[in-house]
Image (cartoon, rainbow, N blue to C red; front, side, top):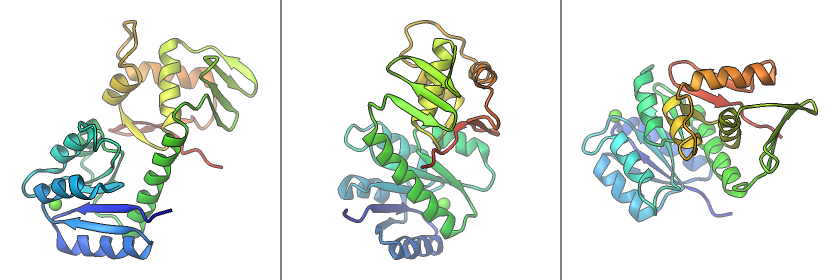
Length: 232
Ligand code: CA
Protein backbone atom coordinates (compact mmCIF):
# COMPACT_ATOMS: atom_id res chain seq x y z
CA UNK A 1 0.00 0.00 0.00
CA UNK A 2 1.34 3.44 -0.91
CA UNK A 3 2.33 5.67 1.99
CA UNK A 4 -0.58 7.83 3.12
CA UNK A 5 -0.09 11.51 2.52
CA UNK A 6 -0.65 13.88 5.44
CA UNK A 7 -0.87 17.65 5.10
CA UNK A 8 -0.18 19.68 8.24
CA UNK A 9 -1.50 23.25 8.26
CA UNK A 10 -0.08 24.95 11.33
CA UNK A 11 1.39 28.43 11.83
CA UNK A 12 3.69 27.53 14.72
CA UNK A 13 6.93 26.30 13.10
CA UNK A 14 8.04 24.35 16.18
CA UNK A 15 4.84 22.31 16.34
CA UNK A 16 4.92 21.84 12.57
CA UNK A 17 8.45 20.48 12.70
CA UNK A 18 7.83 18.06 15.57
CA UNK A 19 4.65 16.70 13.98
CA UNK A 20 6.27 16.40 10.59
CA UNK A 21 9.25 14.52 12.06
CA UNK A 22 7.05 12.10 14.01
CA UNK A 23 4.72 11.36 11.10
CA UNK A 24 7.61 10.78 8.67
CA UNK A 25 9.17 8.40 11.17
CA UNK A 26 5.94 6.40 11.07
CA UNK A 27 6.24 6.10 7.30
CA UNK A 28 3.79 8.83 6.26
CA UNK A 29 4.43 11.23 3.38
CA UNK A 30 4.22 14.73 4.85
CA UNK A 31 3.43 18.10 3.25
CA UNK A 32 3.24 21.29 5.29
CA UNK A 33 1.84 24.82 5.14
CA UNK A 34 2.26 27.72 7.55
CA UNK A 35 -0.90 29.60 6.65
CA UNK A 36 -4.46 28.93 5.63
CA UNK A 37 -4.38 30.04 2.00
CA UNK A 38 -1.29 28.01 1.15
CA UNK A 39 -2.82 25.14 3.06
CA UNK A 40 -5.98 25.06 0.99
CA UNK A 41 -3.96 25.31 -2.23
CA UNK A 42 -1.99 22.28 -1.12
CA UNK A 43 -5.18 20.36 -0.36
CA UNK A 44 -6.19 20.90 -3.98
CA UNK A 45 -2.78 20.24 -5.47
CA UNK A 46 -1.47 17.41 -3.33
CA UNK A 47 -4.76 15.59 -2.61
CA UNK A 48 -3.66 14.43 0.87
CA UNK A 49 -5.44 11.50 2.54
CA UNK A 50 -5.66 13.45 5.77
CA UNK A 51 -5.21 17.05 6.88
CA UNK A 52 -4.10 18.11 10.36
CA UNK A 53 -5.68 21.50 10.54
CA UNK A 54 -4.98 24.15 13.15
CA UNK A 55 -8.05 26.21 13.95
CA UNK A 56 -6.35 29.58 14.42
CA UNK A 57 -4.32 30.45 11.34
CA UNK A 58 -3.22 33.57 9.50
CA UNK A 59 -5.18 33.98 6.28
CA UNK A 60 -8.06 31.57 5.95
CA UNK A 61 -8.83 29.98 9.33
CA UNK A 62 -9.31 26.29 10.08
CA UNK A 63 -13.11 26.39 10.11
CA UNK A 64 -13.25 28.03 6.67
CA UNK A 65 -10.77 25.53 5.25
CA UNK A 66 -12.57 22.53 6.69
CA UNK A 67 -15.92 23.75 5.48
CA UNK A 68 -14.47 24.38 1.99
CA UNK A 69 -13.01 20.85 1.88
CA UNK A 70 -16.17 19.15 3.09
CA UNK A 71 -18.40 21.07 0.65
CA UNK A 72 -16.25 20.37 -2.41
CA UNK A 73 -17.20 17.19 -4.28
CA UNK A 74 -13.61 16.48 -5.22
CA UNK A 75 -12.14 17.11 -1.79
CA UNK A 76 -14.85 15.95 0.61
CA UNK A 77 -13.36 12.48 1.18
CA UNK A 78 -10.21 14.13 2.59
CA UNK A 79 -10.08 13.31 6.29
CA UNK A 80 -9.62 16.27 8.64
CA UNK A 81 -8.33 16.34 12.20
CA UNK A 82 -8.93 19.76 13.70
CA UNK A 83 -6.47 21.11 16.23
CA UNK A 84 -8.22 23.32 18.78
CA UNK A 85 -7.04 25.52 21.59
CA UNK A 86 -6.90 24.07 25.06
CA UNK A 87 -10.26 23.15 26.53
CA UNK A 88 -12.28 25.24 24.09
CA UNK A 89 -15.40 23.14 23.74
CA UNK A 90 -17.04 25.74 21.54
CA UNK A 91 -14.13 25.34 19.09
CA UNK A 92 -14.59 21.59 19.08
CA UNK A 93 -18.30 21.92 18.36
CA UNK A 94 -17.53 24.43 15.62
CA UNK A 95 -14.98 22.09 14.05
CA UNK A 96 -17.27 19.09 14.12
CA UNK A 97 -20.10 21.25 12.81
CA UNK A 98 -18.17 21.93 9.61
CA UNK A 99 -17.41 18.26 9.12
CA UNK A 100 -14.06 17.62 10.83
CA UNK A 101 -13.54 13.88 11.27
CA UNK A 102 -11.89 14.22 14.65
CA UNK A 103 -10.15 16.79 16.84
CA UNK A 104 -7.26 17.10 19.24
CA UNK A 105 -6.87 19.85 21.81
CA UNK A 106 -3.61 21.65 22.45
CA UNK A 107 -1.34 20.82 24.10
CA UNK A 108 -1.02 17.26 22.79
CA UNK A 109 1.92 14.89 22.51
CA UNK A 110 3.18 13.90 19.05
CA UNK A 111 2.53 10.30 20.02
CA UNK A 112 -1.11 11.09 20.80
CA UNK A 113 -1.55 12.82 17.46
CA UNK A 114 0.09 10.01 15.49
CA UNK A 115 -2.26 7.54 17.21
CA UNK A 116 -5.21 9.72 16.30
CA UNK A 117 -4.08 9.99 12.67
CA UNK A 118 -3.85 6.20 12.43
CA UNK A 119 -7.26 5.74 14.04
CA UNK A 120 -8.95 8.21 11.69
CA UNK A 121 -7.31 6.66 8.62
CA UNK A 122 -8.33 3.18 9.78
CA UNK A 123 -11.87 4.34 10.43
CA UNK A 124 -11.99 6.03 7.03
CA UNK A 125 -11.02 2.75 5.40
CA UNK A 126 -13.61 0.79 7.35
CA UNK A 127 -16.36 3.17 6.32
CA UNK A 128 -15.24 2.90 2.68
CA UNK A 129 -15.17 -0.86 2.81
CA UNK A 130 -18.46 -1.26 4.61
CA UNK A 131 -20.51 1.36 2.82
CA UNK A 132 -23.43 -1.02 2.53
CA UNK A 133 -22.65 -3.03 5.61
CA UNK A 134 -25.83 -4.67 6.79
CA UNK A 135 -24.84 -6.04 10.14
CA UNK A 136 -22.91 -4.29 12.87
CA UNK A 137 -21.88 -6.33 15.90
CA UNK A 138 -20.54 -4.92 19.12
CA UNK A 139 -20.38 -7.36 22.02
CA UNK A 140 -23.92 -8.44 22.86
CA UNK A 141 -25.40 -5.91 20.44
CA UNK A 142 -26.27 -6.69 16.81
CA UNK A 143 -27.71 -4.04 14.49
CA UNK A 144 -29.26 -5.64 11.42
CA UNK A 145 -29.96 -2.88 8.92
CA UNK A 146 -31.44 -5.17 6.27
CA UNK A 147 -34.11 -6.39 8.67
CA UNK A 148 -34.33 -3.13 10.60
CA UNK A 149 -33.76 -5.08 13.80
CA UNK A 150 -31.68 -4.61 16.91
CA UNK A 151 -30.78 -7.59 19.09
CA UNK A 152 -29.14 -7.68 22.51
CA UNK A 153 -28.00 -11.12 23.69
CA UNK A 154 -30.12 -12.64 20.95
CA UNK A 155 -33.31 -10.87 22.08
CA UNK A 156 -34.94 -8.32 19.83
CA UNK A 157 -35.12 -4.78 21.23
CA UNK A 158 -37.90 -2.56 19.87
CA UNK A 159 -36.59 0.89 18.98
CA UNK A 160 -38.53 3.71 17.38
CA UNK A 161 -37.56 4.50 13.78
CA UNK A 162 -35.75 7.61 14.98
CA UNK A 163 -33.83 5.74 17.66
CA UNK A 164 -32.87 3.10 15.12
CA UNK A 165 -31.49 5.66 12.69
CA UNK A 166 -29.44 7.41 15.36
CA UNK A 167 -28.04 4.14 16.71
CA UNK A 168 -27.26 2.85 13.23
CA UNK A 169 -25.58 6.10 12.22
CA UNK A 170 -23.43 6.27 15.34
CA UNK A 171 -22.50 2.58 15.13
CA UNK A 172 -21.56 2.84 11.43
CA UNK A 173 -19.16 5.60 12.44
CA UNK A 174 -17.92 4.00 15.64
CA UNK A 175 -15.27 5.93 17.51
CA UNK A 176 -16.22 9.22 15.93
CA UNK A 177 -17.74 12.07 17.93
CA UNK A 178 -20.85 13.81 16.64
CA UNK A 179 -22.47 16.98 17.89
CA UNK A 180 -26.23 17.00 18.39
CA UNK A 181 -26.60 19.23 15.36
CA UNK A 182 -24.65 16.78 13.21
CA UNK A 183 -26.79 13.88 14.35
CA UNK A 184 -29.91 15.83 13.48
CA UNK A 185 -28.61 16.71 10.04
CA UNK A 186 -26.83 13.51 9.13
CA UNK A 187 -28.70 10.73 10.90
CA UNK A 188 -32.16 12.23 10.59
CA UNK A 189 -31.69 14.77 7.82
CA UNK A 190 -33.60 12.82 5.20
CA UNK A 191 -36.22 11.41 7.57
CA UNK A 192 -39.60 11.69 5.91
CA UNK A 193 -41.47 12.19 9.14
CA UNK A 194 -41.19 15.06 11.55
CA UNK A 195 -39.26 13.89 14.56
CA UNK A 196 -38.54 15.22 18.01
CA UNK A 197 -35.42 17.33 17.49
CA UNK A 198 -34.20 16.69 21.01
CA UNK A 199 -31.39 14.21 20.39
CA UNK A 200 -30.78 13.71 24.11
CA UNK A 201 -34.27 12.24 24.52
CA UNK A 202 -33.65 9.70 21.76
CA UNK A 203 -30.24 8.75 23.15
CA UNK A 204 -31.77 8.21 26.60
CA UNK A 205 -34.42 6.01 25.00
CA UNK A 206 -31.81 3.94 23.15
CA UNK A 207 -29.69 3.44 26.25
CA UNK A 208 -32.66 2.44 28.37
CA UNK A 209 -33.94 -0.08 25.84
CA UNK A 210 -30.55 -1.62 25.09
CA UNK A 211 -29.75 -1.78 28.81
CA UNK A 212 -26.06 -2.40 28.10
CA UNK A 213 -23.54 -1.34 30.76
CA UNK A 214 -21.44 0.65 30.21
CA UNK A 215 -23.57 2.26 27.47
CA UNK A 216 -22.32 1.69 23.91
CA UNK A 217 -23.11 5.34 23.20
CA UNK A 218 -20.87 7.58 25.28
CA UNK A 219 -21.63 11.19 26.15
CA UNK A 220 -18.76 13.52 25.30
CA UNK A 221 -19.35 16.38 27.68
CA UNK A 222 -20.01 19.68 25.99
CA UNK A 223 -19.61 18.15 22.54
CA UNK A 224 -22.04 15.35 21.78
CA UNK A 225 -22.06 11.58 21.44
CA UNK A 226 -19.85 8.73 20.31
CA UNK A 227 -20.43 5.03 19.73
CA UNK A 228 -17.55 3.16 21.36
CA UNK A 229 -14.68 2.21 19.05
CA UNK A 230 -15.28 -1.28 17.64
CA UNK A 231 -12.49 -3.74 18.35
CA UNK A 232 -11.57 -6.98 16.65
CA1 CA B 1 -2.37 28.65 15.32
